[in-house]
Amino acid sequence: MRTYEVRTYGCQMNVHDSERLRGLLEDAGYVRAPEGDQADVVVFNTCAVRENADNKLYGNLGHLAPVKAKRPGMQIAVGGCLAQKDKATITKKAPWVDVVFGTHNIGSLPVLLERARVREESQVEILESLQVFPSTLPTRRESPYSAWVSVSVGCNNTCTFCIVPALRGQEKDRRPGDVLAEVEALVAEGVLEVTLLGQNVNSYGVEFGDRYAFGKLLRACGGIDGLERVRFTSPHPRDFTADVIEAMAETPNVMPSLHMPLQSGSDQVLKAMRRSYRRDRYLRIISDVRAAMPDAAITTDIIVGFPGETEEDFQGTLDVVRQARFAGAFTFQYSKRPGTPAESMEDQVPRDVVQDRYERLVALQDDMAWAENKLVVGRSVEVLVAEGEGRKDAATHRLSGRARDNRLVHFALPEGVEAPRPGDLATVEVTYAAPHHLVADVFGSVRRTRAGDAWEAAQGAPSSAAPGVMLGMPTIGAKPVEPAVGGCQIG
Image (tube, rainbow, N blue to C red; front, side):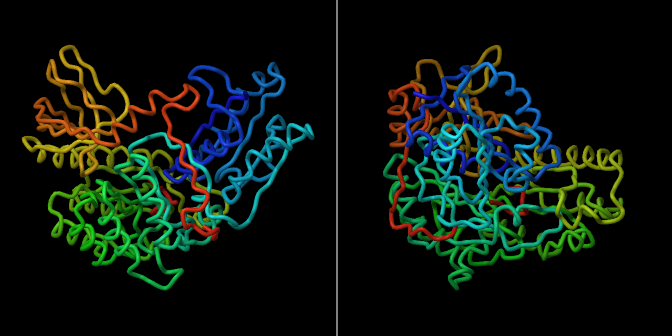
């Protein structure tokens, strides 16, 4: 049997798409290559948001060229956002690539690989619009206990720094019943945590005429027996409404965590970015969320060095960071992306200035995150135990997992206590805070879950399938509609 490897770059939407690519390949008879072995088929699922995406891809392709030359029958495929953007350019720059496919036709991968093998020539297929919502495709999930669920794909925003709408297309919403059917199917497989994905989840429902659809969807998830944790990413501040905050606060299994991209704390820069909100609106949302959920952990995305950004503008960003008290932030140095309006804007900020501002922002955000994390010391938190060994130091072996507010927690296991399995829920007391994680040296209890059972069962699966879980989704009420995230940096 031919083996495969999928290498993923970029956002959660790409991670979710890679689960589908693995499902498609296994459905077609491929098996996952054991760790450390060279696969017969290597698939790159690419990102085009950051400036070095091209260099990273072609560098990796270059490394594989001599490997492929020595392995007759080996195939290389390139998909995702960069493939959608560059189209036939990829096979010109790297003629040893066998298949190029885009964001709208990931379901074609097995057929394209076979066609390339039979015809002994590269196959390039890039569709300009989606024909079948990708959630109808088979999926090989990486986690038996946690899953992504797409509520929409594409984006209707026109941010000047972002290329995603051109690559993912206009927003297409799934019907609520289809989303809930998928969630119910996942819970039946043992999943206890789902993350609802969309480029802008707050605009979910616009396509079928219900601007309150996302809040209703959150509440509906609250009625699914066995679903213990619901998250979502990412909302857009423009469309964030009070009903969503109420749904979060009033639905017990919707977690007290929110990732909402800021991008800049300067109204002038936000206007240039074509972000249709201003700093006061953003801070008001943060205030409303905290009023409804005082312990909510809020994270964000921030871009430094956007064209025309002055020191005064940058100080505005620092001021918002101080006021918002983010528990974490994904911080980016602005980089030009071909085809975006920002690429040709005047007053591009010098690299050294961008670097300096970036370092000051990171230092401040680390201080703010550390201060927020210190407030959790002494509290008991419920941790969803994650895969992997956790952290080790000279005296203590720790497991790791996420608290309800999505903070990373490393916790100690007392001697003689049976280790919880990934997917189980442990109650621990936080004893130390760092900027990016918490430490809990006081162990309370563990609750074994069906998700832990599912993880344990997956360990007994054939080595080619572990640790993922296969979920076939041919219908589950999802019609083949045209089918990701806030501020274009989903994550």
